[in-house]
Length: 184
Image (tube, rainbow, N blue to C red; front, side, top):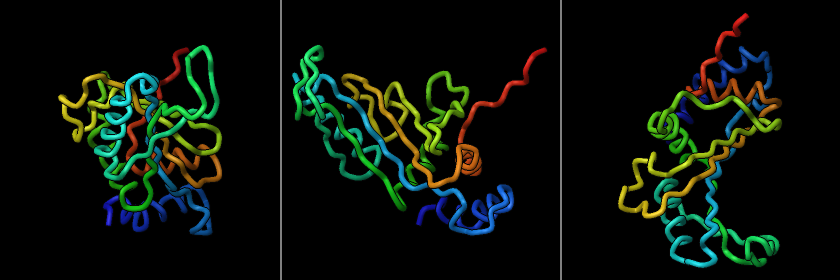
């Protein structure tokens, strides 16, 4: 079992129940899934770029990634409906908690010029992070990064509000930016 999953049930959930004034255990905010995705615009011309992106996502996540297709044609990008344009993987259960543990303790501190992550959520309690390059993951060798590309990570939570989701992420020691005191 993942360390953070045990910590959630033994420490974090009772702490959040008390902190947020929630009586029911099922109403306490909880992490549902983590989605990793990367767009590969050059895949329409070079199929190896898509295979490369799938391989990196599989190494980072520990499970098989799937390729995504374009939903509609866009003439300006020379894109036709059905062309392969990206890769994605969804983590749940033990792999999700293991990835969260690695992200908080290993990956985030390795981001260049890292001063913390912004506290902006999407209004439904979900948090997204965009990485400029995948070399911050220890699983990815420098030789594999022939052409560095970005990655999107979305943390989907079951919560009542953004404030409840922020409280959950803080309980997991998420590296948010420190709030700066207002001048004046």
